[in-house]
Amino acid sequence: MTLPLFKLPILVIKLVLETMGFIDLFVLTSASSKTKRIVKNLITIRNFRMNIFIKKEAIVFCFQKIGNLNYLNMIYMEPEKKRRDDVFRLKIGTNNVPSTFDETVDNAIVLTIYWKQTIDHVTKLYNTFFEIFKTPLKGINIDLKDVAVETYRSWIKWNNDYFFDSLYLEIVGTSTFHDYVWILKNVRTKNMLFLNAEPTDYPEDPENNEIVNVEAASVYIWFGRWMSMQQLKAIKAESITVRRVSSTDSQINTFLREMKALEVPSYLKKLRVRFNREANPAVVLEGLDVINEDLERPDDVLNQWSFTMASGEKCTAIYVEYEGDVPEFGFEFQVGN
Image (cartoon, rainbow, N blue to C red; front, side, top):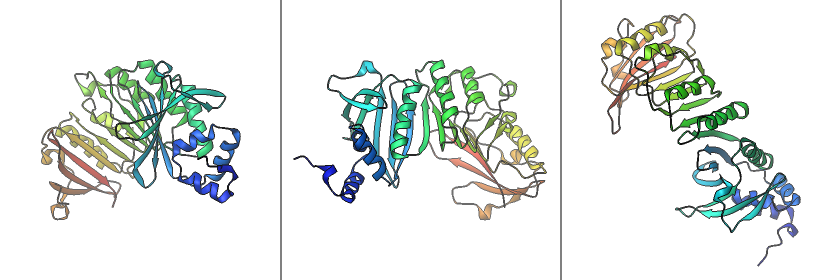
C-alpha cells in the first residue's frame, strides 16, 4: 500500500519524516526538488553527528545519533569498478550517481555510492549532507594503509583547507619515518590531533632528529619512540599524550626542570609520558622539590607528588602502571591549582 505522504497535513508529514533514518531521508531528498525542499524545511531536529573515514577500499560517511552511540547510519563511497548490476540512480548535485542498498554482517542497512573517489566528489557529497541536514562534522579518520603517499598527502591538505576546526583528526596506518615527519610538518587541526600512525623505520638517535613545531589544543601520539624531549617542547598544546617514548629518566627530568622554571603560566596543562619499562621516580623528580601526596592519590595510581612552578602554578605528578598485554608505565602531570 502506497502512503500519499505529501497529501497529509504538514505536521503529520513532519512527524513521519522525523521517524525516518538518515539514509532514508537522504535518498528521499534525491527524488525531486520538492521532496528535497520539504525535508530541508521540516527536519529541524539536528540529532546526528558526522564522521568521515578515508581508506583505500572506501570513503565512509558515518552518521551517529546523539545520545545513542549504537545507532549508526553509514554511506560508503566506493570506486566505480566495484559497482553491481542492481543499482539505482541517486541525484547528487547535477550528477546521477549509481547506488545500492547493502546489508552488513550485523544486519545494518548501508547505502553504497559508486563514484570516483576524488576530493571534488567527497566535498560535493559532504556539502549536500550539510546543506540539507546541517549535520556538523565531528571528525575525520585517515588510514594510510596501502595508500599512495601523494594520495594521502592530498587528503591531509584537504582536511587543512576544509575541516581545520573539526573536533578531531585521527591518522592511522603505517608510513616511513620520512613521510611521518612530512605529516607532522604539514597537518593542521585546531582541536584534537590523534597521530596513531606507526613509522616503519626509526632514526637511530632521537636527539638528532629535526625538531618540528606542532600545534593543536590536544595532541596524542601513539608511537613516540622517535621523540626527544626537545621535540616535546616544540608541541604547543594544552594536553599532550605520548606513548612508547624512549627517553631516559634523566632526560625527562631535564624537561621537567625547564618546565618548572617557567615564570609565565604554562600553556601546557596536562602531560602524559608513557613507556614500556619501569621508571625510577627519584631520578625523574630530582631537584623539583616535590611534596609527597600519596595519602591523596587515587587507588589506581602508584605514587603522587606535587611541586610549585616559578609561575606560582601547582603541578601534580602521578606515577602509573597501565593495564594491557604489554607492560606500560608512565608519568602524568597536571598543571593548575
